[in-house]
Length: 238
Ligand code: PGA
Image 1 (tube, rainbow, N blue to C red):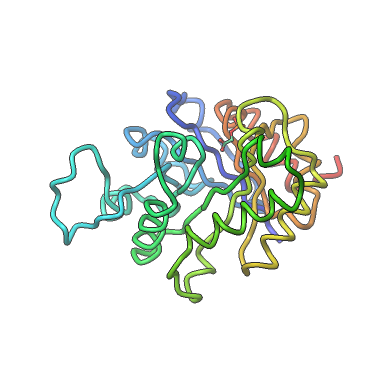
Image 2: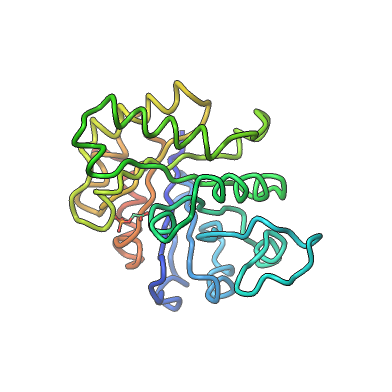
């Protein structure tokens, strides 16, 4: 199975020029999610697919009077095929499960593939495995409430423990694999791991058969490092 590697540039300014020559083997599926104004720069490279980091839940039929928001139709015009939803950095700014759920439904109805982020806080992690699993299942239930089964094939869940994001302290690969198994028992979806993945630790996550890939933030900003992470997914034993 080809692994899925997603680059999330967040609000960082990407070096679009350096990415122009980014080449990877077809043995991995790569999605790059730049900030919106850079979509056109990144849309030219056929070695990866384009993703967005968010989308609004209203679509073109509701008119355009939503200052600052971007619709599924606009994203698709720019060649976007994937959208990250429910990232913990957006949840921290006030995005509720209800909002995530509306966005998930709109994105799926438009044909976009959804990368749905879920993950427990440090406090929940401290309470133990049962508490963490309970949190993740509640988050998934709320975010996917009312989503029809036929759409599940277009959803990938990114398990991103909040305490591991941007901290340089990733989850243990075996714990991430266990959480992936737990999620796969709840839903027939692919599961990625995200949180401080870099070129040194990527192989440990990517060789786990329970994990279908990784969502990479900081380490994806440098195309050379990200390429090494992609290569680790193709041959995780090197
Ligand atoms: P990180 O971010 O790789 O910098 O920890 C991951 C993410 O937020 O998706």
